[in-house]
Image 1 (cartoon, rainbow, N blue to C red):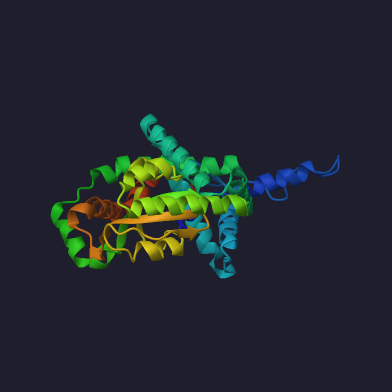
Image 2 (cartoon, rainbow, N blue to C red; image 1 turned 60 degrees about the vertical axis):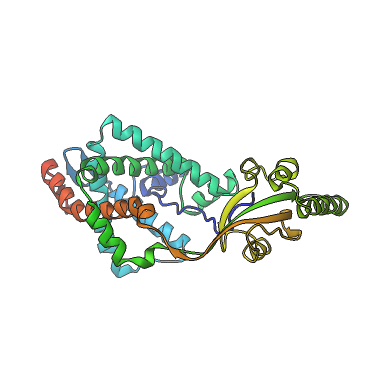
Length: 336
């Protein structure tokens, strides 16, 4: 089955090529005999038990943030730079503190989560080369991206174990959120259809015409009352929906307009005429139409619980990080 047109690439956020690495690369390209020392000394600006952040680390993070914003057509105002650097430093310290507390189980969970994220990111790209080009646009190498994603996933595993697992969200809280936020749970109109697809991509005009003629004969058989699911199994060339008797559910905006226009105007059990899209010819049968409605509480309660848990963790997180800083005796070095 064709993919949704609304499918978008996951936002890729990770550290860019570091300032220290840029300086070393420049040094290696210098003429023999040139000074190899960096232009500015790389000093420790934050330290504690299990924590060490150098000026080059902060520079890398700042360059990363600027690269990500530039990739989205944004910039960092000069007057905002000091506050942004402070926030980045706090985040880097917190990351090191949580990584230091990671158990083997946390690291296993984090590694698996990161692998899945990487696989999903690649799948959302049209090709491996396209995926790498997006990283290059952000100033990233693949190892840097993988390292950053893995660290973030491990940190999340630690936070889930040490904070999220200790929060309790009861049924009354879930019901209250559901009642007070009905707009979050509105489901758009959707239809469940079955289709027989005849692929015509990369076919010549003559081959396409033969495919159309074949599809027309199958349409005549469907209109004559033959079992639609049997026709799907015999003729459909959509390998994704075919094992499910050609059936799938859609909402508006997911598929080509020609397909949707037919699907949403059919009556239950009605069969369409031949529908032509960029993928080929389709015969559509409407199985079920569901009007816009509010999702039942039982179907969204897990999602509400996760949202409330996340909010509770975010409220506790700043104080918890401060506690870890004190335990690790983290010091910010303000002088060179």
